[in-house]
Length: 390
Image (cartoon, rainbow, N blue to C red; front, side, top):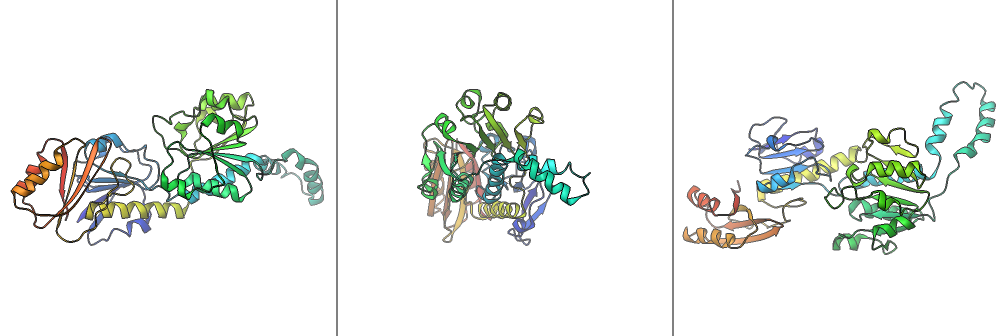
């Protein structure tokens, strides 16, 4: 029986992917096999020695100590793309909020409760509506920074709305490039993208290279009157620089899903309470993807959508499966295979991949290795952990 520690409320549709005859799910376990979470801030002290994998039902993973997990040989999974449509739809609403006097108009109407005469109200609205005039999106340029699952969907929708779309993504994968419309103009540097775009939307993970990427120097290049949208992560933007840009008028609006105290009340700051992925459908999709990934990892050792381990999938064609995590240095796999050979254990199939400083192996053998063999493999210098599939 696998024990799954759920540290947030995970959608039942996701948990249903873990059969109750082989999985036990609770909010407290002393020795869980895996952890499922959403926004819970996971500390290293929260991770029991028994934990084999951790899955975040969402795309961001800065609430998980990934480096520590890698050292312990624990894959961390996320669910890229599962909430992409929810975020995309909110961004489209943000674009209209940034181009029209919608919020201001709604706020104004809310002050008219003292008027009882419908005719009087109609005349007043006809007179005052010019105060809330805005611009259409069609024909304007949207700059998309990061062209992954969400960024590419936003780009496609913007094109359908008649916008011009420019994209910047120095780490664009081959798969993402194939998904991207040929109508998206690729821009080689961020300064150029900001200088030509009426709206700029950010879709990047938090890395050392992206932390405070949008800073004072970059914002000095932004097109006058442009709006900046941040529905990715708070840390990508230097908030102080944004406040300055809004105050001096070089930036028209900052529309973000991450309110901070220094942005509250600032002219042009339109702030939402981190609701980008807050739809029933997104929560269900994330939970289903996270649960499926954990299940395949625990039962078969396969890894998909890990942020710290290589992607690896080996079909099971009989035999007993062993998984091995090790430092990515020479000779370790050879030593492992020698131990199996000395024990007269025949290898049926195997797959080995590495990512950065960590390597991961799946080995299918004809006969079940005994505890002594497993201990010998675990004692090889550089091996982090060895697991026999149930």
